[in-house]
Length: 461
Image (cartoon, rainbow, N blue to C red):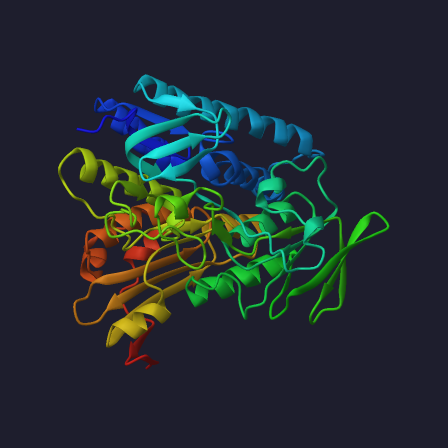
């Protein structure tokens, strides 16, 4: 029998990699995990967690304004960017410590180095040049922002990574992209007092989301003062007298202090030695895996964003737990990528689970669409003009709710609960039988008794 240095070697210390290493080690396996930057990965270090902290910070100016409608007099306020950055950095350091503590507590060996494959069972530790062997290897190196290297002047631009570490808050920013990262940061910077322009080549922001929510959010953002330029792209970026000059295809020249590119993410596979080890990748560089997250090399698995399946932190963790079941518990388990609840932490938020109206109309012969748009109770005294949108997509034949979509405050929290409901296969009749909690915004989900319209064979009737 071949002897290896480790039962499992994990490359990448993000959510999927850490979960794989920690649980495998807790089962008595000899495990090592290597991370070249910081433990916690994109989500904890330069993604969801610091972004959500920034979202909270950006909301306070509206809270101060809203308070007047409820009888409060709020004095002069000011914002200190450096204090926010310091507080964020302290929290991220704390969370990174917890990740390492969990690994150490399970007796996993923590390596702070880049690791590259030499062959199917051998890994080279770049910091020392040492090679080690492992029976099983997990690749969980995540992804990184697309640098958009074809753009003249891309070297003057930042990505979401650098947005968390700007020394000064800019007076004006141009953000290229229309996905959730671009939209979230547009709301964050605007909320912190930055003149914000979002430029996107498509017809509407958030292309993969339900059309009603996309349009509703666009209108809300524009009403706040965020400039959104659709059907347009950046042509070049240059430095002009200490500022950036941005040439666009259709809107002429823009000027800003910072240009942020949020034009998608690419898998972190460059230089990992995948080809040498026989691990296949696709045209984008993503690791190709089967239904069980196994690569073209039987003892090597890949999890999370590096596979370019569903780029969400909880999905990477779920894939890690399926790997544990498959490899160490004799229970082959396929990750379930259907009906995943998600949120866009824009202002207002989007919470969504299941099929959009557009997707569902292609899959089902007849749909019932229940839609409500209303002013939330809080806005009646605050005077804020934002509207909430709630929408249920129902298969008319089975009465099963196949999509639920919300635009408004706390939409992300509601989406998590709706995720359970749709995963359980609940029908519209189940919604109708559920008593409302009053007064809440979410009670609309169980009080929409008549469909707003139907879609038959892809056509609204």
